[in-house]
Image (tube, rainbow, N blue to C red; front, side, top):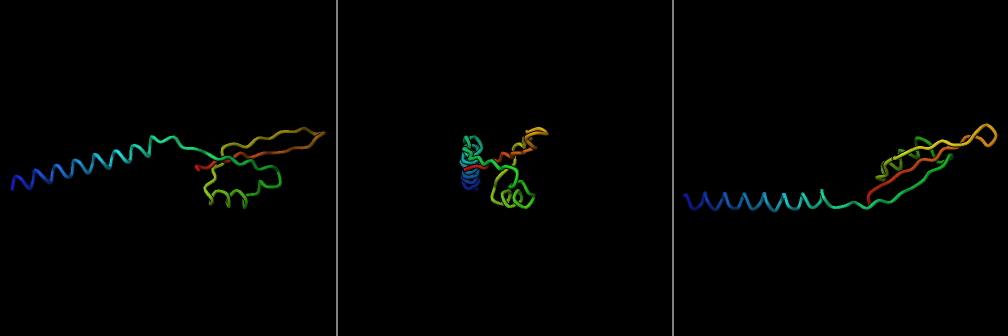
Length: 81
């Protein structure tokens, strides 16, 4: 009975060690990103929701311009490759 219990403990410990190792490798792997820029006409809620469903994350929105040139916005998105 003690041999079976000892083997069971070894199997559980090794399973946890290998499982943790795979988990840690995934967590420590450096992600690669792809980027997308949207400008004025593409900044609707509908478009942003569609891109969000595709895995894109809104990172930043920039406004620029003045009274003579008009107001413009750009949105910057990223997602993991």
